[in-house]
Image 1 (cartoon, rainbow, N blue to C red):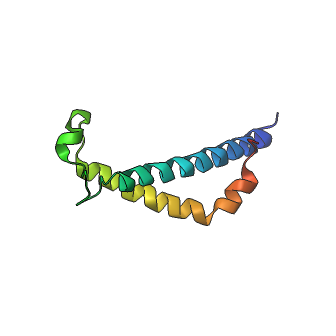
Image 2 (cartoon, rainbow, N blue to C red; image 1 turned 120 degrees about the vertical axis):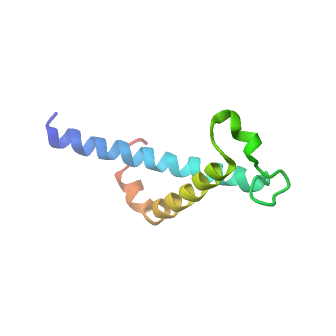
Length: 88
């Protein structure tokens, strides 16, 4: 296998990873909002809930926000990712 083929194959692998990540982000966001973990929610996430992990509730909120931005980017490029995927 040539270096160029190996490079293109890795790009296909990454497209599959990004597509799977997009699915996982959707699930992460759905759980966060559906279970009311958000600010003012029925079961709001607090620092005490996550202190054993060495993070704060604000860190989790930051990750949810970042995940949302990443999902927006990936959704805008879903057609491209689907074309590049080679996992079916």
